[in-house]
Length: 459
Image: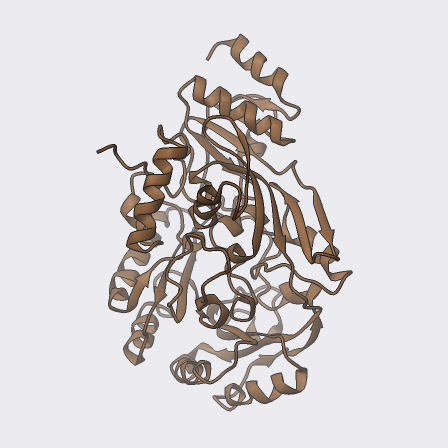
């Protein structure tokens, strides 16, 4: 790239254009997962859709691959070279109570949407962590806190503005650009950079939610009780079970401080009285270290999982479990708990309900028949990266007999060449359709610094 090329690009953008070594370059590329360190040749800090158009035009003209990042939670692969578009400056949020919908620009986070929607008794289908970016979460499917009650976040999208590899800003809806609409919702950033999204809000103002904490030594019995319990609850009950090594930190409640605990998380959309009744079998499963279940405004729903908002390095993977049994639970416990070599946060999320139903407008989110998702996150310290990846590989290899696929958003970071792993997020037919659409919308695979879906080769 010549200097005048960069100057021409900068003249077309409202946001900054940054090169390695320039002030602000390192801060701009850093995302939430500190284990993923981008090393692009150029960064465009997009402030508007036109900046994204300019960036994609520039990349195409210079043969550069393109990556996109907002908060950096949805890590996939590090950008080695190429052009990185950051979207955090595009943070507009508009809520329309009449249509029960919201519009967000590419860099908006759910902690911006939730309070705006709450003013009208509405809520977005956000995940457990409100500080996650709306667009990337939704394009990967979006597994909501209220998923069993209201389905995948991707199923509620009305329209998207997206810049495709040819530098065009398109408007994708179920009726306008329907194939692109289908592919984006589940295909993430393989088909372009979404600069804005309109989606449904749901009429939820409050929850009965919180958690039950047990000592990790009770995990076998709690897992067995949880499995029986999930087979009986209505779609209004959303829950997960997590095994968590809590640090010995004054900010951690004293009963869990420095302990390994089993945490059952609850988000029930029915009445508090019905919630109390439904949760009672879990209370009977064993003595509790702590319980904080309560009626709460939806604005406080992030307290249920209490995911830390502080960036850190970690490795992760997941498995969608079609038909788990007692052997599944024993396999999970074999790899987790205080005796394991590496600390790991293990979460089993109950799926089904609305998550299993076909959406009004189809999309590429796959494996809707899974009953649970198991996600494992391992914090990285020092030289633990290789050990962490080996640990995850062993664990999920042992879980293969019950695994029907993976969920894209929790797949963890890896290698751009690992397309077979990405394929596991989709059904066979959907992946075949995605590769055909990739050949139509991005035949040169410009958008490849991601969980890559390659264009199908011409016959």
